[in-house]
Length: 510
Image (tube, rainbow, N blue to C red):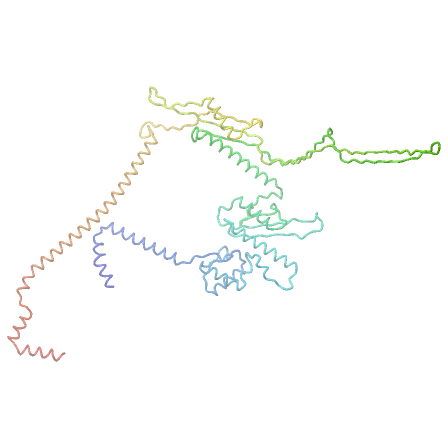
């Protein structure tokens, strides 16, 4: 405590007394702000950071988990109407292990671990139910890992196998998403979730998956089992991408030549979305080919009686040939691609040039349109860039139109001769003045502190000199006075009995 008092007396009080009123107010404000910031920082550092322990719990299950946490003397917080339990980050893994040893939670996002609980006498129906619950839990975990999804709840319906095809029903699924941000998720993420579920369940088609958010809005683009709505959306999106791609290619040619903002390109594309499969058979009767040939040969011999007892043997042979011919046939199976460009309509508007012309009234700007030669040259470049095809009956038009050049004129004042570069120069000078003023204020503050320090040192030197002067003035007076030994010697001479009494008293006290 003495050190603190001494520090305040020597350092703080002289420094505080040298400050004026405004400096004192500023110093107190800075000290209070620093103290508040320190307290807030300590609060945030001391306060534990909570993380989600379990989410999507049933009410009874959440109550059991909270009861166990109170038994473990671990702080917790509830969110989402009591279905989400949060604990400090440092305790989350320890708590999960302890609750798992207690068999909690039994609901929520359970996966294939539910199949680990094998029970004797379990019927086939219960086994199917557990498998479906495990599958739903695993899919929910996978969906919850997607960016923007806080939690998910999946319901799957797997119909029983049927003997007849007409009685067979398709599998269906529905999912409810709790989103972690207000903006929701993109349509591509929704489609990814749909195909994730369809790929995880046997016999489930993407059109049989329904996706909702926590407020009941339909996120999946499903039109009563028909692909017409999905196909139309895909067509519009593809058409938009093709048109933007061609416009960017045309502008990449025009902007370096004419400058940014000097041309406008609009492309309208007609795409072919017909899904056509053709099977063509061509027959060529002029060039038949042998398919099969059958040859039958018959032979016989006869003996004829002749005169003088001599006979001759006559042999007969017959050959039949049957030939089957096949007409040449060519079979072609053609599948047309979807999304090919059938026709393009291209419209381009280009601006002319502004040149300064010196006249009687001074320098003025004059608009000069583009020549036909320049337009033809630009047309050839753009047609080559976008893939223009005259055989496809593509339409291409380019026109030179004067763009709106807004020039503000004022009768008098600063804006009568408005110059953007001059304004930038003025703003730069103002910026330099402000920077110089700030530097001067800083230097003034430093100079002021140095001057105050020098004045304090001068005051201290003056005080030291005054103390030395007074000490020197008193020093001769003390030198003229008799010393203490001489004084005692004089007293002993004058009254030795009294001195002896004093010495005796001092000895007796010792």
